[in-house]
Image 1: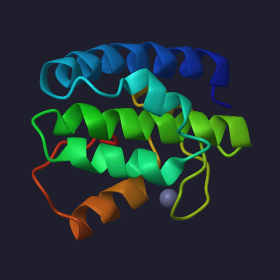
Image 2: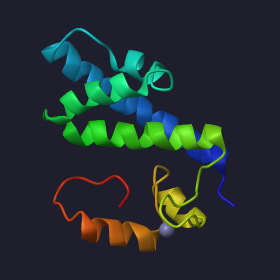
Image 3: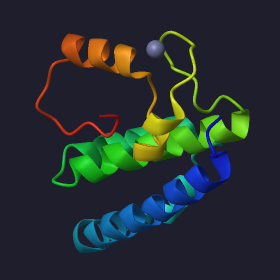
Length: 127
Ligand SMILES: [Zn+2]
C-alpha cells in the first residue's frame, strides 16, 4: 500500500518549486496571471486552466507545465480516492513506482505501451 501522505507532501513540495519557476517565467513574459491562481481554480474551472496551460505549453517552460499538470492531476486523484490506480487497466500502480514518481498515471506495462503509441522525444514526467 502506497504511503499517500508522504507522496502527497512530495507532490506539494514539487508543485511549489514548479510554481516558482512558472511564476518567474510569467512575471518576465506576461505579468498577468500567477501560477498559484490557476492552481487554485483548477478544480472549479479546469477548462480555462487547461487553455492557459496550453498556451504556456508552447513556450520554453513546456516541461515544467507538463509536470505541474501531472502533479495537479495526481493531487486530484488523491482527493478523489483514485490515486495509485492505473488510468488504462485499473490495476494498482506499484508503491515502488509511486515512490520514484508520485505523479505516475499508469502502471509500468501501460506506460510503456502508451509511450510506444505516442512516441515522442518530449519530456514525460511519468517515466
Ligand atoms: Zn495499467
